[in-house]
Length: 540
Image (cartoon, rainbow, N blue to C red; front, top):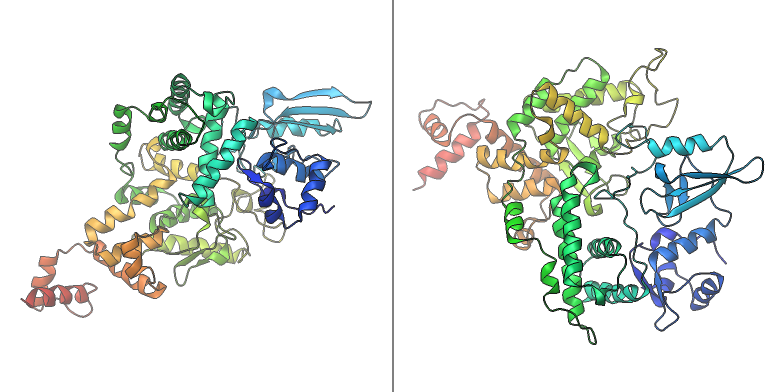
């Protein structure tokens, strides 16, 4: 029996048929039967035979590592999450096993599964240290960020365990994939939302869920939304979760032999007042281009760390790049000479794993110069193509005994493990610029380019398409038909002209009159624009 099958191929919240498992791992039907005899438990002993994704992951993990895996940096291996996870501090228990061994048990911080390992007493302090070393405390956290007792927006949610519900979820997944033609990531979000509901309702059978249960679930989501911060749910997450659950019960109503209140799906919506309040929120007004410049101008640049921090703000402002991609950029992804950033999803954490080519806009005020200054420091100190473009503090600050930073030769440079350092850089810059820091986040930088360029640059359709492609957005069907094949060189010229126009302080009328009177020369950067305005308005 091969032990090289990748457990992570199976999604935790999905339910698979026997045929799907066979195709996913490229094995024969006899291998599946051997797995069942070896301990892989199907949902029920009925046909068609179904397997829960998290059970399949657990089985394949135990098959690959039958003796378990030793802890790593104070974290135990979780066979549900398929990764090394810290334990929730309040759940850690130790008991003696012989004279030289301790049994350590505790709850996984992501999926809340109970983990156990027999360890040497010398390792136990590392377990406690890892459980309290949260991402907000240090940029040196190893592995993915961990969450507390309440799941964060992106944290793992325990999967469905009710066998009857698992059958329904399998049929629901087939419906989403076949009838609604949703991609895998979207289907996974639907199943995660349903798992969140089922968890809060005690894994109650879907057919028995009542209007009172729907109200209780909605009230719990409201409570978590009001928590705010890392321990709460955002408004969009609440709306998305309720919408996915409503879709499930709308689909269940059409299933034969299922009787439920016809009004039940309607209760998986927020009240009209709450929806109106959510839709009336003005998005992106917490930061504008002028405020972003204030942040940049207020930042010092006397030390390497300060030079890096200014470059971070400059790149966020000139590209609108997502923070998850920013922290995973390496030197080979950024071409300072051409000002192009190659967000390769194989190495850069991009949304939906899209391959995005981003052009750094020339918005003046020394923004591009700040990025170039940081790149010169990197190269002068031996950090090349494979090193992170934005190096963590430990590579560029003096150590405790004053012997200088940790150079590229002493260890392999690693990227930041989370976006917390970037958020701290933004908060520090806001504080230096005397701007309320609680109103600014990294994502707000994506929302400053379009309002600024559309208002100051009188953006045309082709220019808007170029900007949307630069941000990694997918144009609508009509626009994609005509402009999706836009080459990088063409986009570069369009965006350069748009930025130059937006930064010009002369109106179209002033440029028209200046060209008509011969007051503008070829050396003037607005000459071509003035000539175009004059020719366009003189044709009539």
